[in-house]
Length: 244
Ligand SMILES: Nc1ncnc2c1ncn2[C@@H]1O[C@H](COP(=O)(O)OP(=O)(O)OP(=O)(O)O)[C@@H](O)[C@H]1O
Image 1 (cartoon, protein in one colour):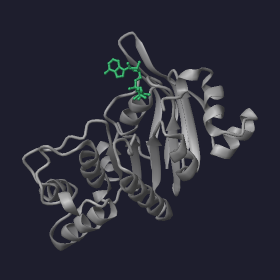
Image 2 (cartoon, helix red, strand yellow; image 1 turned 180 degrees about the vertical axis):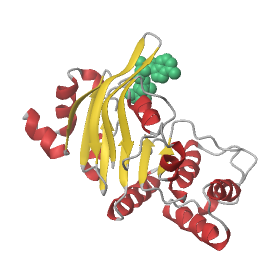
Image 3 (tube, rainbow, N blue to C red; image 1 turned 90 degrees about the vertical axis):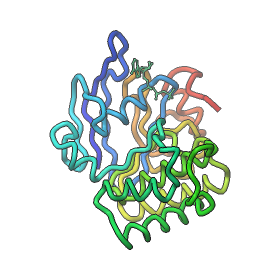
């Protein structure tokens, strides 16, 4: 479970987060929705302990990432907008390296690499160096690294960007499987179809503030608007919520 209370973060004079509070439950996929610049990436980076909040508290399975960063990192997978691939390593070498950093080794690590490779349909790039990989191939490798150590909590920043239809489906299936296993998944996205089909809960943020949290159906009911995209625009209060 991931909890945030009144989290605030400034970059100089820019207020990125002005007061974000929510609870993301285990066994649920929670969408993080907000217009460009709303604070989604800043929130994810703060939750994982890469940024220190100016105010407020965060608990990942009850642990404050600033007080015990190693414990939190062992139980979290973070897919960021920076994939951080090593161009000279093949996908398999790269995943082995990160697996070992997370305490995995030997046959168990090899089996797990095969498993995530199948899950994300990436057998064709498993033994290629990442130099020259397409955007979709790069995000698959980064996603595989994120899932490799079976984290109980997953924070994903726009995970389906650049993925083709088959890979998007594979990602959806992978996330559904993680939900069944009881993982807590938070996913920043602009794709409303993804939210409607995949997410149990939605956190809407605008200008660094939580403006609503609830299931897609609850948000539609609360706004009196049947379509989630229109309900989102109404909650955010502008047309800028729509990016596609
Ligand atoms: N390192 C930084 N230095 C200065 N300002 C920053 C920094 N990181 C984020 N910001 C600002 O904080 C605000 C929130 O940015 P953030 O990247 O969190 O938004 P976002 O919701 O992820 O946007 P998008 O949908 O465009 O990816 C923006 O105004 C952004 O310019």
